[in-house]
Image (cartoon, rainbow, N blue to C red; front, top):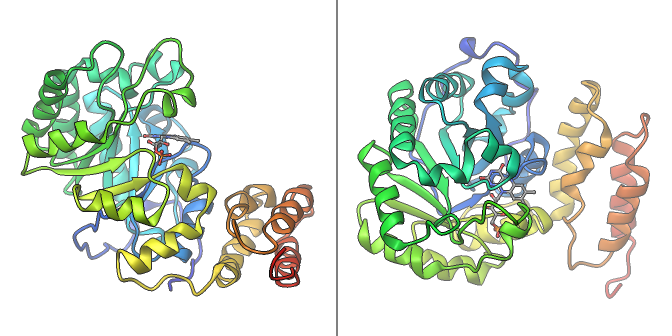
Length: 346
Ligand SMILES: Cc1cc2nc3c(=O)[nH]c(=O)nc-3n(C[C@H](O)[C@H](O)[C@H](O)COP(=O)(O)O)c2cc1C
């Protein structure tokens, strides 16, 4: 298992080039804003060495005008890691893809699925499903800016624009621009009237639509996303699709990733949740030294013992003692001791 090393320095251009192998897309963790930050990804990587990780969505504005390192810096242990971009200006997306490449990301992904009002008013995310020609232009510009794979993550439709023919046109236009990998969140988005959370729950999941797409475009790679919460469901999906992307279940129950690493990828996950925590402590110490509050560092740990004795004590201790300016790694060690002391049937 790779341990996290010191965080990447701020000048991406000087970095050693990383030897690229093809990306294994069978198991990926979804981009999730405020959830899959670099701390969460480091923990997930320590649990499961071979799964594909995605950043939270980063807008082109944040990359081109913001404090770039804040949004883009990551630990080398996080590879294979895809950067998800939000934007709709071809030139800005191309420049952002080039910057992401210089930072060392293994893949650049374009968000075509986020339904939030803020994102829609910025004219990116799911609303772009109504503009296949613009999306094709964006994808072509990104492809011309990097040798890394450009992928998209999209829905199966938006509002009334939800026919299979429209979806085929959309995917066909993006494929004609040179994109070969499509992550499909298998439900449509309703752009007015539903919150982002409701848009992940209310529109029904339609794996059958994604299966039809796969039949329609046998040469393209389709990764299924939405509602996959168990090893059995992942295996079933992998019988039909090229990969599965897991969102909420991976965050709420990160040990699921260890099971998938071993059972599906034949890889070597962390031995048990406690060893993943011990390995993560190196990252916690480095980040605390950089001033990152402990509360941010413990957030991805909360669900790690889900379903095991002591899970409640673990969660409670981290939630209660993990706040405050002086809180450090000792809080995590104390929580581990509580789990170790929990009776087997607690
Ligand atoms: C808290 C949260 C934040 C999310 N942020 C993003 C995002 O930044 N980009 C994106 O493409 N999808 C985002 N999503 C959607 C997920 O990537 C995924 O498509 C969705 O949760 C469905 O997968 P699941 O059923 O496995 O959770 C987010 C989901 C959650 C729960």
